[in-house]
Amino acid sequence: MNLKTLVWRELAERPSAMLTSTLTILLGVTALVAIRHVTVFSEREVGQQLQSLGANVLVLPKDATLQDYYSADLTERTLPESHVASILLENLPGVERLSPKLCVSAKVANRDVTLTGILPQSEFQAKSAWQSVSLFSNKHEGCKKAACGPKTYDAAPETLASERTIDQLKGNEAVIGADVAEFSGLKPGQSVELLGEKLQVLAVLPRTGTVDDSRVFAHLHTVQRLTNVGEVVNAIEVMGCCEDAAGGLVPKLAELLPDAKVVTISQVVSTQVGINRLMSQMSLFVLGILVIVGGASVASTVSSNVRERRREVGTLMALGATPSLVTRMFLLKAWTLGIVGAVGGSVLGLIVAMVLGSQWAGVTVQPLPDLIALSIGAALVITTLAALWPARSAAKLDPCCCFQEF
Amino acid sequence: MLHLQDITKVYRRRQEEVVAFKATSLDIGLGEYVAVVGPSGSGKTTLLSMLGGMLSPDTGKVWFGGESLYDLPINERTRRRREQIGFVFQTFNLVPYLTALENVQVPLFLHGVGKSEQRDRAVSLLEQVGLGNRIEHKPSELSTGQQQRVALARTLANNPRLILADEPTGNLDPDSREAVLSMFDNFVREGRTIVMVTHDPGAAARSSRRLCLNDGMLVTPHEIHTTKAA
Ligand SMILES: Nc1ncnc2c1ncn2[C@@H]1O[C@H](COP(=O)(O)OP(=O)(O)OP(=O)(O)O)[C@@H](O)[C@H]1O
Ligand SMILES: [Mg+2]
Image 1 (cartoon, rainbow over the protein chains, first blue to last red):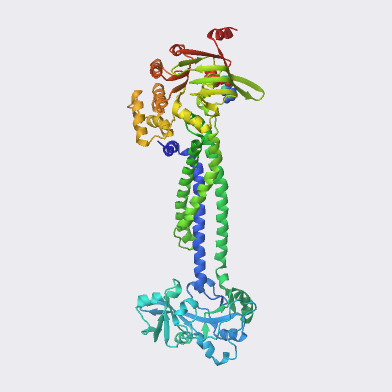
Image 2 (image 1 turned 90 degrees about the horizontal axis):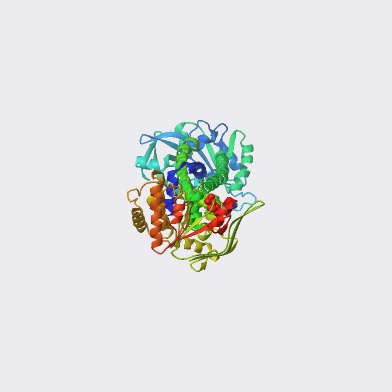
C-alpha cells in the first residue's frame, strides 16, 4: 500500500467519475498535437520549396500555373527567349543573375526524366549584344549586400545544385541529377543519349532531395534545337541580390513584359504560408481552450471528488494522514487523469496528423518528440494548477466528518 | 495520560450558539476503560474528537502524555494520533474500494512501514480478528460484523496506547458486539486505555468508569435522570 495504490484503486473502481475531464484533456491534446505536427511539417515543406526554387522572382507564361512550375516543370506554354535580352537591356537595379529554362521530357536508360535546358552564365558575358550593359552591377538603392568583385565564371558545375545557375556548359555537355546518375549508372566523362543526340556528362549533381535530382540539365540552345520548339523558354528565374530587391523587381518586370506572369517565390507559396499561419493561430486557440475548458473540467472533477470523499479524507486523517499527504493524494488523482489524457491525446493527435496531414495538406508527418513532450508537459501543468486549489481544500477539511453518518 | 483543563467548545451557526462541551477539569489515567454516555446531542462525539486531536477547543488545553495537544504543530499532532491513538467508528469507515487487507495496510503505510512488512502485519492482524480467509474481500462483500472486525484490525495496526471509540457496537448483532467488547477487554488488560462513547448499557457496564454528559456538561447519572424527568 502506498499513495499510488490508494489513488489507483479508487480510479480503477470508478473510472467514469474522471472520464469527462480525462476526455477533455485528451481531446485538447489531440487537437494541439495534430495541428502543431501538420503545421511544422507544412512549414518545413514550404521552406524546402523556397529552397528548391532558389530564384527570387519567376517570369512565367501568362496562363501557367505556379503548381505546374515547381512540381513538374513541364508545360506546353512558353515565353520567347528574347525576354531574357529585354530584361538584361533594361538593366534593372538589384538583378544579380538570370536563368532561362526550358523543360521537356526525355528518356535515359528507358526511364522518364526531365531534360532542362539552361543558359550558362558565361554566355551572358560573351553575347555581343549585351556587352554594352554593365552586367548585373546595377545595385538597387539601399542594398545591404556587399558588392561582389568582377565575376570570373569558373565555378564548378556542381554549384548548379545550390546556386541554380551554371557558369560554363557547352552545347554537347549535360549535367545529371543524383537520381538519374544512380539508376543509369552514368559517370562524368561518359556519354548519354538524349532525344537522339549523344551528350557528354560533365558532372553529377550532389543530392538535393528535390525534383532536381531526377533532372538532366543541358544547354538551352541544344534542347531548343533537339525539340524544334524555336527560341522559347518555359520560365526565366531572376535572382535578385536580396529579398528587398525581389519585391521591387516584380512591378518593373511586369511592366516590361506585359505578356508574362511575374511572381515572387514567396507568392508561389503564399497560400500555404497563409494556411500555416492560420494553423499556428489555431493551435494557440486550441491551447487556450485546453487551458480554460480542460482546467475548469479538472478543477470541478477534483473538487467534486473531494466533496464525495469527505468522510474518507476524515478517516485517513483520523488514522494519521497529514494535510500535505491529503493534498498529494488529490493531486495524484489529477495527474493520473492528466497523464492518461495527455499521452492518449498525443498518440491520437499523431495518428490524426499522419492520416489527415497527407490527405488534406499533402505533407508527410513524422513524430516530433519535443513537441509531444511539450504538449504532455503543458497538459500536466494545466491539470496541476487546476487541481491545486481543490486539493488544498481537501487538506483543510474538518477531520471530524469521519464521525458523521452519510 | 489525558487531562482536560478549562475546556469549552462552542458551535456558532448564524445567531445561535451551541455549547457542545464544557469542563473545568477531567483526568483519564493510563489503563482506564471509560464509557461516555448521554443523550443524543450531548457532546459525546465532540469530546472524543477533542481527545483525539481532531477538534481544537475554543478555550483550555488538552494534555496527552504530558504535551498540550493543540499547542503542537498540526503535523506533530497528526503524528501523535498516527502512532498512539486508534479510532473505532460506529459505521466502521472502511475505504470501500480497498480490500480488507489494504484497509488494514493504510495506517501502516501512513506510518512509513515497508511494503512486505505492511502485508505480513496486516495478514496477522486479520488472522487475529478471525478474518484470515477474507483478506481479499472488499467491505461490501463482508457482513457488518466482519467489517467492524476489519476496522478493529486497522485500529490495532500501529499498536496504539489509546482507543477512542464512537458507538463501536451501535450497528452490530449480539455475537459481533461480544467479539468487539472482548477485544476491548483484552486491550485494557494489557494496560492500555479506552474511551468509548456508547448507548449500550451492557457495554457501558464492562467499563471501569462512566462519564455522563448532558447538554455538553459532565454530570452524575442521577442528574441526567432528573433532567430527563423534567
Ligand atoms: N459541526 C457542527 N456544527 C454545529 N454544531 C455542531 C457541529 N457538530 C456538533 N454540533 C452540535 O454540538 C452538539 C454536540 O454534538 P455531538 O455530535 O458531540 O453530540 P453526540 O453526543 O455525539 O450525539 P449523538 O449521540 O447523536 O452522536 C449538538 O447539539 C450538535 O448539534
Ligand atoms: Mg456522536
